[in-house]
Length: 260
Image (tube, rainbow, N blue to C red; front, side):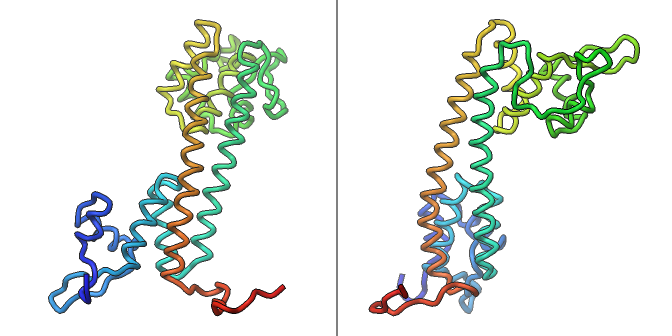
């Protein structure tokens, strides 16, 4: 492009974006500020092109909001904050994998009358020693009572009412269903997708529908893990172009050997 650098359209074409989208990304801090010509036109460089490639690459693994914040931190010169955000995503992915394993373990208990074995212990039962009330169950699942009521409204859990007090009571199978809902919600499944799964399991006495959902969850996690791997290369290239950052190790001369 010669001395005049790159135009917004040059960056936009590479990713099938509009030129306005590229300008918006600069305004949002995702791209570093561009120099302007005497007539006010933006002049982009290799740095801006790599910033946009990095942002696009980060989205599948980190999500749009997190990817944007990572670029903002880098463009503000805060490498440590950017790396912390990346660590957060990897930690969340690890937690998602653990959650998936917990759902698969809970699947074994699905046809049992006992609640899943990995539920925390605690004083959850009612006066009869058989049913759970909404407050203790909510604490057990780390959700709010309002969340359990929302699940009830869409048929995900079906508590009875205590005749003496009118309070909701949850049987062992209700607790089991609530546990599965919590785990599937944690995996990113919307309520309208969870309800048919539980209904099929209840009506058919089988777990095929849930097994399909878990298989899909596995595939989505794998895609995300690969996306993080792919984006790391683009991110590294951008850090090299945008650096050096405060706290980064000094560059070695080409013929300099590392200390041993």
